[in-house]
Length: 295
Image 1 (tube, rainbow, N blue to C red):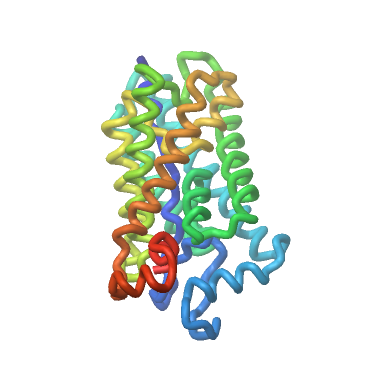
Image 2: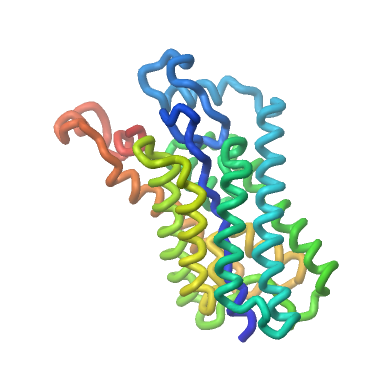
C-alpha cells in the first residue's frame, strides 16, 4: 500500500543547539542564559528562574512560537511533499529518497531555528521535556498549538498543490494492526527522544552535531518503520494531514505512541546521565528521580 511510504517524520526536533559557550543546552526552548550572569550555583535552576520571570507575551516568546510554526511548516511540507510527489509520479522519489528527505529536513531546521525556540517541532518532545523539568509547563500549550498549526498549514498547501484524492494521501495510517503500529511508534519515538536528550541536553555532548544526530535518527527510523506505521514519531505530523484530508484512521496510535515513547525516552536518558555524586548522597538529599532530573 502506498500509504506505507508516508514515512514519517518527526521533527522532533533536536530540542535546541547548545550555547555558544557550550555550558548548557537550550532544552528549555526559552533561549540561553549565561550561567555566570544568572548568579546561581545550579545552571538549571538559574534557567528556570529566569524563564519564570519572563512574561508569556514577551517579544522573545512570540519569536519562539513563530520559529516553531515556520520550522514545523517547512519540515512537514518537505517530508510530506516527498510522499505526495512520489505517489503522483509513480515512484520517482523512491522510498529511500523519502527517508533521506525527512532526515535532511529535520537537520536543516534544527540548525536554522534551534538557537531560537529549541527546534522541538513535535508536541511529544515538548511534553517530554516538561515532564523532566527541562521546559516550563505553562509554555507547553502554546508550543503544541504552534506545531499543529505549522503542520496543518503545510498540509493545506500540499492539498492545494496535489489535491486530496485518497491515492495521494500523505498522512500516516497503520498498514497492519493498530497495536503493531502503536508498539512501533513507541519504540522509534523512545529511540528519537533518547538521542535528543543525549545530544541536546547533556553539556558533555558536542552541541554542533545535534542536528546531524537527530536528523540521522529520523532517517533511520523512517527507513525501517515507515512501511509499517508511517514512522510519524510526532502527533503534529499526523494530525495536520488527517484534519486537512479528513482521514483519521488509527489516529489515536499516533498520539499515545509518540507521547508515551518520548516521555519514556527522556526519562531513560536521565537515569544514565552522569553524576559524580555517590549513591548515598543522592538518596539522602532527595528522591532519585529528582536528582536524575536535575543532574
